[in-house]
Amino acid sequence: MEKSIAMETLLDKYKNSSLSQEDFLLLLILYDEYLYNKKINRVLELFNPENTEKFIDLKKDGTFKIKEDYIKLITSDDNTDIVEIVNFLNEKTGKRYSAKSVSTKRLIRSRLRDGYSKDDLKGVIETMANQWMYTKMEYYLRPETLFNETKFQTYYSLYLGSKNKEKDWTIDKA
Image (cartoon, rainbow, N blue to C red; front, side, top):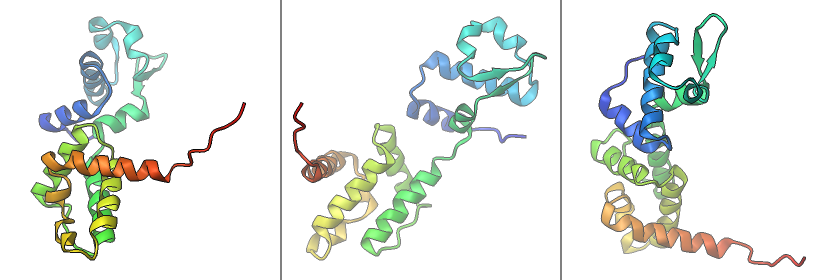
């Protein structure tokens, strides 16, 4: 049986998803029904059947299966992203920061909730490491500096600027 999910975790998953409140609520209800009853009749009484089609595969006997992408949305653990980001930081800096640190997790989750992607955070790490390694600023290549709410936008802008410089700006002639 699938593991139960804490309410705070579900709220985080909703904030990080592109689903409307109604769709996310429907998905949670479907998930609950899937875990315990495997029948869709009760859900169809509450919601328009057309709304459920994007989330489930309905079987002829009235049972259903939630589509894999939506199961992953509900049950995925964002710690894998945090571990990947912290490992990338350690690789770039030669340091040994822990992905288990409460403050590091909080900072990275906050930036992800702000709408930045895992690749955006890794891009910031790469950009700032390229600028600060082997200088007196190297000390600041740490989670509390890089992912701090007040400075992250500045570092992100630098990352975007460096990314744009790498583009090939040739013009195709029609």
